[in-house]
Image (cartoon, rainbow, N blue to C red; front, side, top):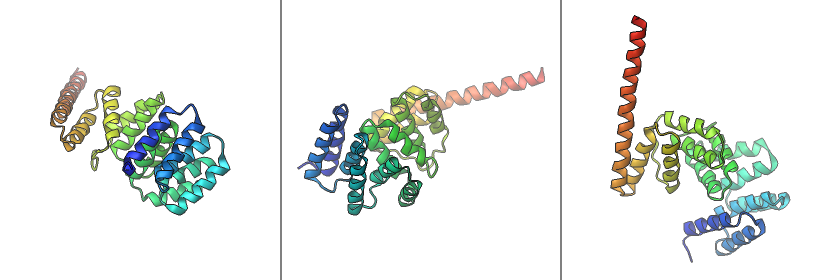
Length: 239
C-alpha cells in the first residue's frame, strides 16, 4: 500500500487527467477512499467533484460525514461555503485556521493540483483578509496566471513588495510559483532569494547559488538605478 501522502498525489493527478469526465474522476476518488477511508484530501476532492457535477445535496451530506471524522477538514468546510454561500461557515473556517497562512496554502494548493484555479484563488483571497506571507501572493499570482487572469501582475508585485519576515518556502509547489515569479516580474529580487533558500534546504547547492547570485544582481541594479534616478531629480531641481 502506498504511503498516505503518495496516495493523495496520485488521486489528484488522476483527476487532472480525467477532468473532462466527472463520473470517472469520482470513481478514481472512491478507489482511493477504499484504501484510506479517512483520507481528508480525497474527501475534499470528492466534495468538489460532487459540487461540479451539480449534486449539491449529496455533496453537503458527504461534507457532514467528513466533518464527523475530522472537524478540521478545511477543504470540506470551504466547499460547504461554496455550496451554501453561508458567511457563518466561512467565519467558522477562519476561526479554526487560527490565522495560519499555511493552512490556507494547504487547501488552495490541493485545488491548484486538481486544476481548480478559481477555487484556489478564492481561498488565497480569504487568506489576504487574515494573515499573509510573501508566498500567499506568489501562490495566488501563480494560480491567477494559470487561469489567464490579468490580476496576476498585481499579485506578483504585492509578493515582491511584501515584508520578507517569516518567509521560508519549503514545498515543491513553491519552486514552480517562484519560477513563475521570475518570469512574470524579472525585476523581483526576492523571488530568486527565496528560491535559493529553498534549494539550499533541499541540498541543491548549485541551484541555490545561481538564484542567490541573481538576487544580488537585481538588488545592485536596483540600488544603482535608484541612485541615478535621485541624482537626476536633484539636477532637475537645481536647473
